[in-house]
Image (cartoon, rainbow, N blue to C red; front, side):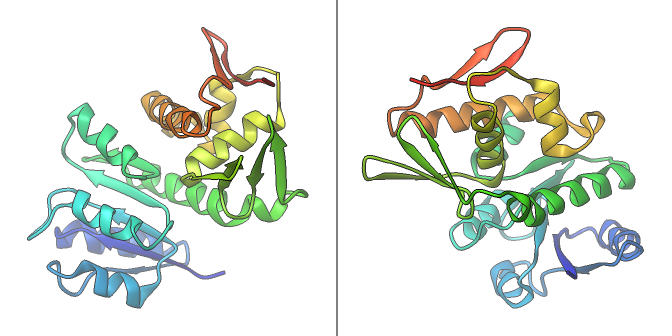
Amino acid sequence: MDMNIFIVEDDSAIYNSLKERLGQWSLHVSGPIDFHDVMKSFIQEKPHLVILDIQLPAFDGFHWCREIRAVSKVPIIFLSSRDHPMDMVMAMNMGADDYIQKPFHTDVLLAKIQATLRRTYAYTADEAADVLEWNGAMIDMKRGIIRLDGHEVELTKNEFFILAVLVQAKDEIVSRDELIRKLWDDERFVNDNTLTVNVTRLRQKLADIGLGDAILTKKGMGYMAVSL
């Protein structure tokens, strides 16, 4: 499958450098024609992954993340020189899949892009079951949705992947390192806080359907999806 990477970056030097480097790996790169109307180009390009800067002309990356998430589950990686922890937390709470600070090493970004593409477009195809049952809830493996007693919660790709891994190892501890490796392929490229943010957000969504206590933290060991 040919993969289209949509890069929303107003620094032409960074954009052109990434376009050349990603092109060497047969990744097609496109960007917005008008930074005042990023969504028009996004809809036209139908990308498989979006890379978003935060500081942009007219509207910032958070604005465009909200706009994209309103219509699409496409994976989003933030790429920004802003290093305040709240920027990363805000990005992840909006549904971003990752956050990389500038300056960055292109090979690190490439590794994250490839891992995210594999996770997003290959994971469910390799799973035998379309639906998992857990504590009376049904986890839709194809749609990334969990339902219980008529209530439905939609998960981001990261949240869904974490839940699926934990539920498939039900009542057994899954270490943080193992989750990180499964999510991002190589833990060297991961900020450990990213996993914490995703697990916290997953718990908050599970709490909406009465399963907030079904994922336990085992201090110094990892996480466990338990049978209630």
